[in-house]
Amino acid sequence: MNKDKGFISINALFIMVITLISALFLIYTSNQEYLIINSSKNNIQAYYLAESKIHMVLNKEEYYYGQLLPRIETYLKYGRLGPTYDGKISLDNKDLFEDDNNNIVNLSFAEENKRRILEFKTSSTYFGISKNILAKMTIINDLFEMWIPIVSIEHIQQDKVEEFTNYMLHLQEKIEIPKLPNGIKAIDAIDYEEVKIINGLDNRINIEFFRNNIDEPVKREILVNEEIFLLLRNSHTVPILSIASEKDWEKVKLKGIIHVEGDLIINSDFELDGIVILHNGQIIINPSKEVKIHGIILLNNCYENLLDYEKVQINYNYNFIKEYGIYLPKFIEPKIQHIKNY
Image 1 (cartoon, one colour):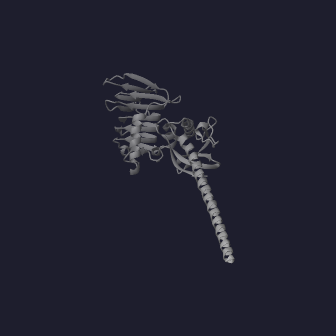
Image 2 (tube, rainbow, N blue to C red):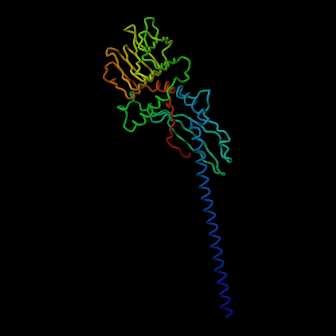
Image 3 (tube, rainbow, N blue to C red):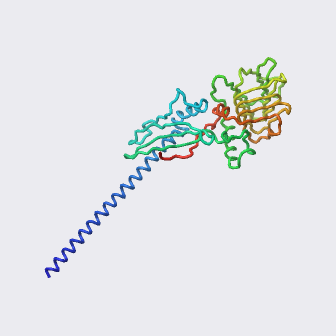
């Protein structure tokens, strides 16, 4: 009987030991799972904190986009940041998580697949776990980097039609004469029926403004050099921009942006380096005249037969597009391609 009691005691002790070991193992396993889950959660949180810095810089309503935009414009104009700007965007400490002390988003530019690319690098720390991320994005509106000289519903792929239509509507709503550098002439022709650009006998380019069906211009200006930003629209009628030369053999040559919500009539040899945007009108060219446009043409609800003219050349020129496109709404339009760890 005593032997049986001893045997039972040993068995009970053995069971208790097994139970204790099992309990300790379960506690250890649970603790490890908690640490793994917590570490994974902190890792994910650190990633999202770093990603949020990218989105803060890209948010046009935030102060940081004001640091980014002139850097993009400088790069597009000169191909580099130069001495004026560095490759860093500094965030305010109030916008950082309390455990995160990295307030710098580094930026650099590159070219991939004939697109201008902006790269961001930054990092964040969350409860001791740090995460480095790289964001890569295009910076110019897709419509200007399709490498085609005429952009219209008839000339683009079907999947781009809605994007094009929305952008042209946005232009009509938002375009205005921007702050321009010295040398680019602002021509804000609102509610005129016709504007004439004439290469005069005196070798000066004259601009005449017509209103109320009066034969004589109500205003005249002289174009000192060839660079212009011309905005012509009329809320009551279809306005006309006409280009001519008083000397039949003399070419009218311009650089910059021509934005017309109406008709464009060309009655002389004409050459433009830049961007032509036409809404709700048509392009009429004297068949005997030679027209060359180096840049891009955007046509919205327009009748155009440019390719029918033997002496018309429309050549896509990226350098002129980016030189003058920076003055158009939503020309600079950063679009994230991917964000990843590095």
